[in-house]
Amino acid sequence: MDFKIYVDDERPKPSDFDALVRTNTQLEDLLYVLNKAGVQVDTISFDHDNMYGPDFMMGLRSLPILGVWPENLVFHTANPVAHKLMVAWAIEHAPMTTFVDPRYFYPMPPGIPEFG
Image (cartoon, rainbow, N blue to C red; front, side):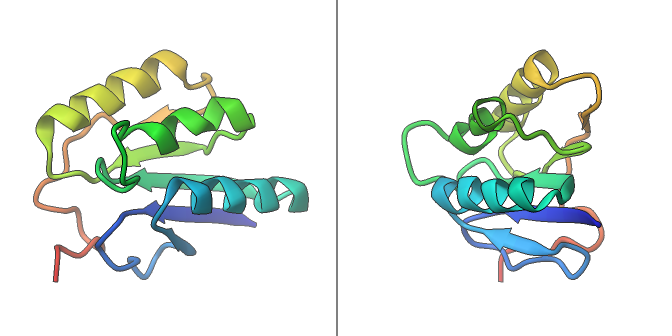
């Protein structure tokens, strides 16, 4: 079973995602449980300001610490500077088995709602 995680502090979960997480702790807890259950994470889509702290990439940076990488990393932020930083970090650190989508989605791609 593949699993899709949407990481965002404000937007609702798109219908084609399995889980919505709002904080880094929620993301780490979910990844731990999925890993223990043998569930492959297909996609994680990150917003840039979802972690309420000085390091907006904290959730992204937790992936190598946990040793859990999805098959696809997507970034749905409206902040172009944060987008570039997240994509660059992911390309440098993700394993070759993870596809890092470099596209800048704003407005949001189909299926991902705007604020509302």
